Length: 287
Image (cartoon, rainbow, N blue to C red; front, side, top):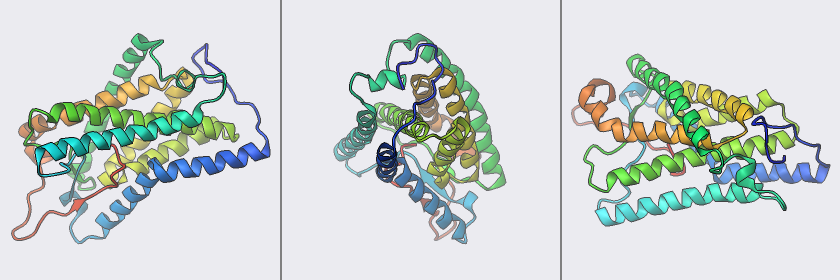
């Protein structure tokens, strides 16, 4: 694919057999060390949750748990986690790089249209975030969604900056890999637009399966909408902006949500002499 002038993604040129084989291997390797690995662990976490005698609605998971009881080491390990997570994003961008082309510009992850990207990202965040919150609330009410602790309730002064970095990592990880990278590679292999959109949306849903049925549905819809927008706009940046905003609101606003609606967003109370089952996703899951 060449640089996009009109905003719509162009069709891809045919490739030879050797290139096709190499791309298939590359895709499987990338998935094995990034979002595919996380999706598998996430689905297995959901299966284990469903097999427990405790109803799934009475179980919980943490998106940004502390990594150490000592503040210094907790901050250091969190920063390292963000760094190595972004290194995986850098890996797929490097794989997209070709002589004579700019991979970041090719997938629309640059600042050439930043004003428009931010505007579109804000609209997408509203269009996806508000229904997503409602879907989570419905899932909790129906007992089919895990109680998700989006951030620590005993926040220190360094918690907010770390949560902002975690939100940015999640936005870049999912949108660059699910959309920018996989769309490029699957389209080169001859996949149609809707098969690409639906497959990446399903992978995104599996990536969040550990949160329960509601988030699976919500992320499937999000993947379809984001994939359609990418086809129309030819730019990943609005999707990164939207995803980061959604996660910032979820992470930073979580303590307020618990205070206002403790029954819906608050931690699940443990039965007497029995801890609340906690679902632990793969460490590579970013949000």
